[in-house]
Image (cartoon, rainbow, N blue to C red; front, top):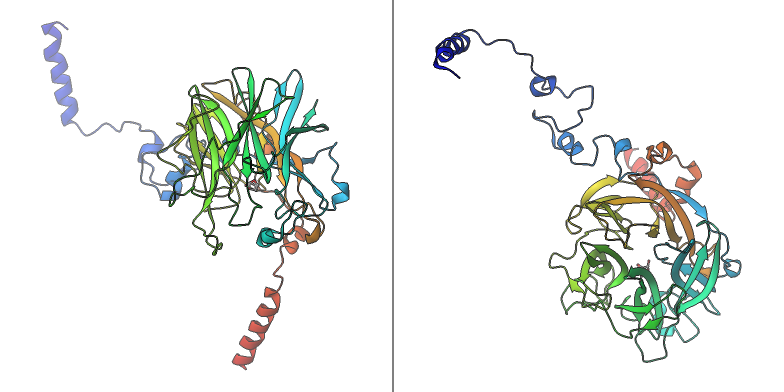
Length: 432
Ligand code: AAL
């Protein structure tokens, strides 16, 4: 800028700075202290309540626009026989479906016993024919499907080994990993009827060159118990492997804070164990547990990070969670009528994707399929959703699922009703 210009410009600037402030039009969100009618796309920079601030911490301030919010829709699967629901056959804890040569595959816990389970609290009465829990005396079976709705059971994938090999009592709750063209099933391996001291088992593994087997069981824990006093000292369960950052991220569950003689202090959390090879060693993350709520493990690559579904247990149950680093999870959405023990069909679970696309369907289970307590068994079902960057199904993004009043009345007071009536009578008597 030549010197001839500097003086006039400086003069203008001085006049401007001394004159009353120009009423410069400023965007409403900067000056308007009242929250605007038009929902801001990003966090406004004026003082807000904690709840209003939080709106902008979610993937979208409006839940219907939140890619990690979805309703869940359920379908009964065709092709599985349950002996008329008499409790002698159970199928549960299904793996993530994988698509191989045009066919979907799932692996799952199957129990086929002469009698239904007698309950974890009667584990000392369990025998080689009488199961304690629904997942006692089980093997890993598998099934295939052309469409994810009708399935054909193929048979046993991994049978529980002879005593005293690891898992001789039961093997359950499998999940699949495809790594460098080979197949790995991670599963829980029990050496005692579940309930004997607790639901105690480590995660073991079997491997194969083909999804149809034959599978070779490594016969040892690959995600071992934690040391005495550590949160996962008694169990490593619900293995759920994903390839992330070029490594195997295996998320798992442990129930803790309870002791064999006292089980009412039950708490559940999820941990992460990372390996560079399917045989391990799996290094447990130093920040474990990585999810403070949930039960079975349901995770999938999403954008640069990992998404998780937390159900059933803990303060953050019934939420979708997200960790941009696969470790530090935060609530991304609250969800309802959530699927249990879900394995989502996740095309990019094992591709080492750098930007996960999300999921639209999977398989889950219902553990209360029996019509009476003495016929305890579970069934596998299909669940559909829109937790995907590649579809937008408004029906899946609507809020408020209206259940028939009967659904609520089924969750009745039971024995408490009598107490409530008595208490009310006493209260009215007292005021006479
Ligand atoms: C499931 C899972 C684990 C438990 C039992 C069978 O839902 O959490 O596998 O051990 O229940």
